[in-house]
Image (cartoon, each protein chain N blue to C red):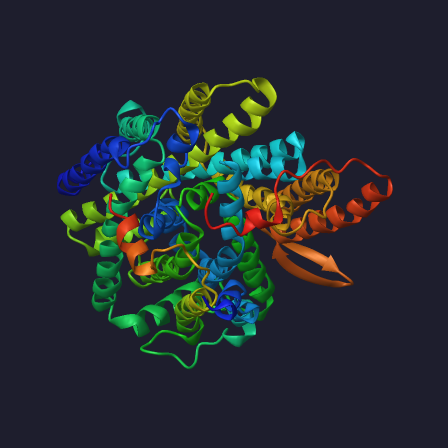
Length: 511
Length: 87
C-alpha cells in the first residue's frame, strides 16, 4: 500500500469530528430514546432548516456522488437523467408528502406501512409494503460502503485482506454505534457538517478544475470527442432514440424516490407540513449541486482520467480529485464523500428497523409489545441491517449490490398505488392492491433481469419498440390491475376492511 | 371579525397548483432541449436548460407555497424559521 498521509490525516480529523457529533447527538433536543418515535423519528421535531440538511444528506448520497459522474463518464448525456429526475420530484413532494405527514402525525404512524395498515385495515398489505421497503433499502446501504471503499482506495488503502478491509469495518462499527445510541438525531447532526464540507468541495471543484482544463467550452468539446471515440454516437448529447428512456427514467425515478423508507423517515421527522412544503422549494439547491457533480464525469474525460480496476468508472471522481487537487484538499473532498455515505446509511438502517419493528414484529410476532421493547428491537435491527450490508460488500462482488440496487427502484415504486393513491382515496380494494403489487414486482424484476440488469426495457407496443424505465412499465401494470381487480372484488362483495383515518386527518396542521 | 376574509383564507385558490405541472412538461418532453446550440459560456443548451429548470421549478414551487399558504397558528413564518431550528 502506498498511503497518502496528508490526505489521510485530514480525512481522519474530519471523521473523528463527526463521530463525536454522532454520539453527542443523543442529547440534542433531548427525548426519551426508549420510545420508537423518539429514536426512529427524533420526536418529529425537525424544523425547515434541519429537515433540509437531513433530507439533502439522505437523498443525495455518497454513492450518487460517485456513480452519477461514472455513468456520465461512460455513456454521456444519458447519465444526466439524475437532474431532470430531481427537478420533477419536488412538485410531487409538495403535493403528496404533507398529506402523509398529517395523517401520520394524527395516528402516530412511523412508517408508510403503518399508514397502509390503518387506511386499509390490512396487516398483509402493510407487510408487503414493509418487506418491499427493506428489500430495496438493503442493497442501497451496501452501496454506500462502495463510496467509502473507493475514497479509501484513492488514499492508498486498498487490496484484499485484513489491513485493507479494517478501515471500512471500523467506519461502520462507529456508524452502527452512534446510530444505536442516538437514533435519527445522529445523522441529522452529522448532515449539518457533511453538507458544508460537500458544498465547499463541489464549488471549489467546479471553479478550479474548469480553469485548469481551459474552460467549459473545452471540457464539453473534449467530452464530446472522447465519447464519440468510445462509440457513444451522440457524444455529449442524446440521440432521438434515447429520448423515451431519458424521460421515463427521470419520471419513474421521481415517483420512486419518496417511496423509499429513508425518504419517508426524513419527511415524517419534520415538525410541520409547512417544513415539508418549504423544503420542496429549497431542496432543489441539492439538485443543482448534483448537476455540477454529474459534470465531473465530463471533466474526467477532458482530464484524461482512466477508470481503474476493480472500481471501473467509479474511480473517475476520486481519480480526478487526486490529479487536480493538492493532497490536503483531496483528503477534505474524500472526507465529504465518506461522511456523505454515513448519513444515508444511518437513516436507511433506522428506516428499515422501524419497518421491521412496527410492521413485522409488532403486527405478526408480538402484538402486546411495550414501547421500550419496541425501541430495543428497532435498535438491534438497525445493527443487523448494517452488518448484513457490510458482509455483503466485503465478501461478494460489488456488481451484485449494484444490480440489486437497480432492482430496488423497480421494487419500491410498486408500493406507490397503496401509499400515494391511498393518500387521496380509499377507493382501491386492499386485495386488489396486494395482487397488483405482487404482479408489479414480478413483471418489473423479469423486465430488468431479461435485459441483463439494465433498467431500460424495450417495450414492444403495437409494432413499435419503446425503450423505457422498467419500473414505470411495471407500476403501470400494477395500477391497471389494482383498478380492474377493485371492480371485481367489489362486485364479489369482498370485505373492504375499515378505514381508521378521516378525510380531515390528511390536511391537519397539528396533532 | 370579518367572516368573508376567513372563509377566503380557508379555501386557497386551487388553480395555483397548476403551476406545479409546468416543470413536468418542460422537462419530460426531451425534444425541447436536446440540442447543443445555443451554448452559453461553452455549456451546451441541453445542460444549461436543465440547470435553469432546477431554479425555475424551485421558484414555481415557492410561488405556489406562498399563494396557497395555510394558516399556521399564531406564529409567523419568519418566527418559525428562526425558532424551530435552534439546536
